[in-house]
Image (cartoon, rainbow, N blue to C red; front, side, top):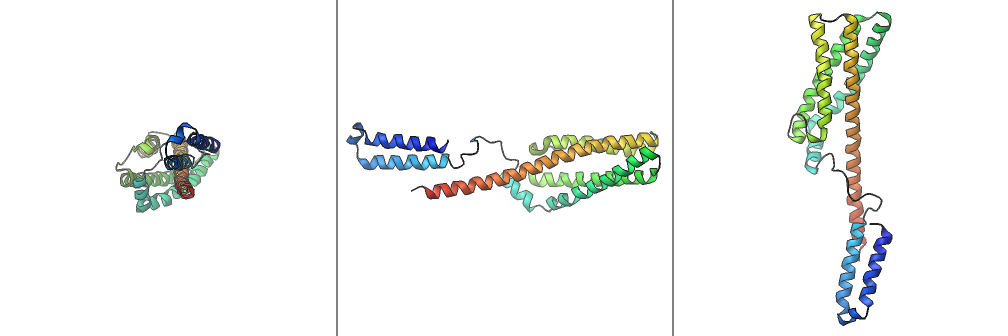
Length: 220
């Protein structure tokens, strides 16, 4: 409710209290009603710049507490940039091989290392999800991220299988690795968006609490 509307409603209450019909009642009751209305209007307008209906927060209070206390949160924070660094190096080596035909061995090793990093972050991520949301995969807050992670895992695993069985030529293996890397980039972007959402939710929650406390404190 905008502040000007709050002032108008308060004014109407005051006018009603001064009307002839209202003079039959004690003035004290109108003062009490007026104070109660003013207090309610202040609270309703505690944050006029934001819509009153917001999407549900990514974490509940209990989930946020478990996330902050879990050591697996730190593990995820360490493994994610390591995997991204390995990905950049491997991508350069794969593109170099496809462009020049050289460095197949180095490119192959880099893809294997990248896949092992993916396995590590998937396993520890599932443990983290269990600790925070009480399920290993497909928690509502990260449902589509987990769905896409399965595709990423499947393509990386398909590369290892094709490499071990010799089912594909070297060039085909590199193209399969590029397909796996493309899905990895999309999946990483999904998680970065959720990370930003979590930070915004935390900031808005803190701001709302502070403004509500300040507003209630100003009400006479």
